[in-house]
Image 1 (cartoon, rainbow, N blue to C red):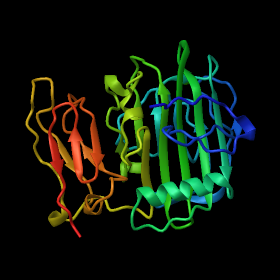
Image 2 (cartoon, helix red, strand yellow):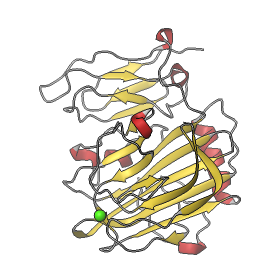
Image 3 (cartoon, rainbow, N blue to C red):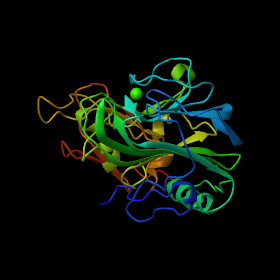
Image 4 (tube, helix red, strand yellow):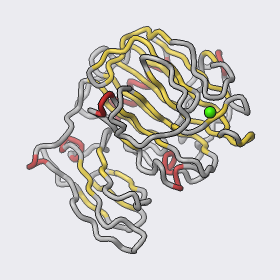
Length: 311
Ligand SMILES: [Ca+2]
């Protein structure tokens, strides 16, 4: 499985990397090379609705996150939910340094092949939504080093898209070097009304050649994570549609003694879960999981569960 971005097309880039690669071409303007820096204010060519709030600008922050109202230099990842005053999309929040190596690029489009590709992808991932993208923003951290480890390289992306009615965030992971630093991946909102943490955040297998961000997915594309941000998705399933697994036996002392998984019932009806909510009630768990067809499988303890089909 190749998840390494091998070509940098720069401003000429307009071709989407297909096949096994979860990341798209690197395109657009290159942000300054500054540790803990941010892009300039990027005025959005289309409004982007993020969990009920309409955004008209964004900042690509060098330490692996995006914020809307103002740039943010934070290099110390925090656990989501933060219950803070900030909307944030964090594909890979850790201390990065693009003065050592790497580029951070961003571009937005209102026509062209990227819109066609994201339209196709979203309609594949999210059943029941007729999506036709009118805008896309692609932010890429390309081979950016960890601070202060010159020579380390990390490639990942955040993609925002909308058709004026629905809005989505895609997080794409390419090659991730190993580090002992903590990494948070996911998103959070003002007061954490909506938040998601990609499993593996703050875990030892977040980074390295077997980074579970790169290996796993919530849309059956290794290295890709997709989330609906507008209209606001339901936060909890109705009780009779609950697919949660309240208890999973611990196979060994190092594993979690209790896990709770819950996700809206519509995601149990034959499609991979685009915004599965996973609540891990212990920090000890390091298992990875896959969601294919109707089954949620944990590769560490071999426990598998099949959702009831609800039509
Ligand atoms: Ca930094």
